[in-house]
Length: 333
Image (cartoon, rainbow, N blue to C red; front, side, top):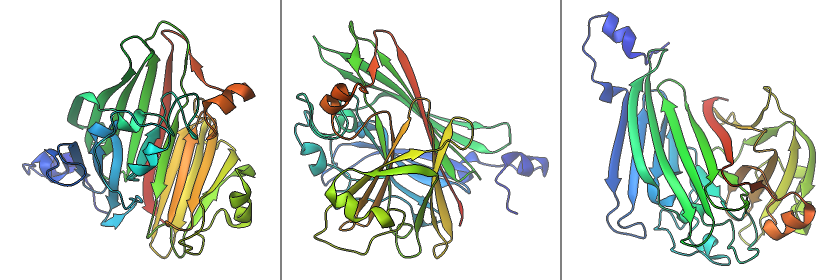
């Protein structure tokens, strides 16, 4: 079996340039809708290749494993953030990608003056830092951290400190967000991670595996696809999106797992999350786009007014911190 441990080569007396095992390339896009935006491309031996987008909240754009694309990317592709996304403007700039973060003050339908899915993915990260280290197992690690603030001069102040880590021979990426209310009063803080899987994994032979105790369709369109929620639907360009909510049983202590497996491609993508701070799971399936959204969250997708009425709106008190964790791993089917 191939080893990506740099220690193994050092023991042979070979001089090893760490660039062979882990490389982070920072750049600025020239031309197109994302002109002037920053990007960080991560490559690790035996792992996932990732494109990070600091000007979109340090979300994860395109991703590949052994040359196979993992993420669904929309026809919009990479684009610059909006200064003030209102109503449903979020959709017009939704490029897809492996992870799009929704929040920090609204998730789902526009509500109480906040646009669809909030502002997070249109906020520019600062204090972006890239570190390359050797882990205790001898493999190379890449860690990217940044701070993202949703703040107004006279209004609320929510801060996210994000850390993304990938390493050689692991085939995965780990995301940890620490959200803090730096404002003077309690602040609603709904959060959802939009993990988008596309072709070829979410295609012929693909299936979503989930230990779901209960599945609830959001509306009549979702009811029509309820029986086949775990399989890619037949392509239907004019069809509507289908959204389900699952009550998922935790598997590893407090962690829940959803797996997209495709034996025809030979790969499986496992998405896991900490249910202590992400207790809900939504699924997005669109027959017209060929996309599967796996969406761990702490809220509904109906907007903050609906959650407020239901008594389920997540709120952070002044000074309160919340730690959310998400992991994505790729392996053989």
